[in-house]
Length: 184
Image (cartoon, rainbow, N blue to C red; front, side, top):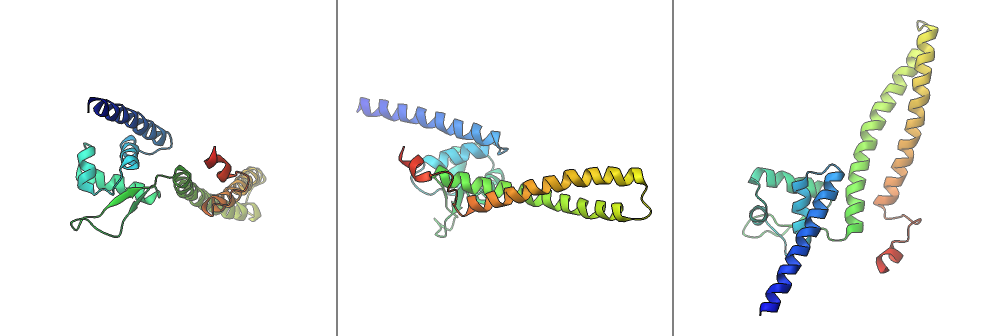
């Protein structure tokens, strides 16, 4: 019995280290440390959790807990189950890191692409109109042409990134043999 307690204690310590590492890693990518810790706790859970149960693990208010879970659901790292427990929503963490990577980064990269291409395309349209206007001075035209060149180059990058996101979303990264990685 004593040996079992000792093994359990070691297991808990190791889990805590991994949970902290997950939280620190997610913090590197702009996710609140507490949200990362919550994901780490859910990663090791063998059963779905309700907000109340999560609150028992974390020292967060119910509103903050709800926001954290919603953020994790939106990034595809946690799923809300259809079946409820005592009329309460249940949540489960995605434990396949290949899927969490794909889910997390497709959401984040798509957001970046949408924000940047919207701004770049609006700027290109307006700058093009300025360049073509007869009322534009030569100095202003040259400055706008320089900006247009930079922005068109940036648009090429975001179009490439969109293709990458589509490959990632469709799990079609044939450059990387995930089956070999999973077996090693």
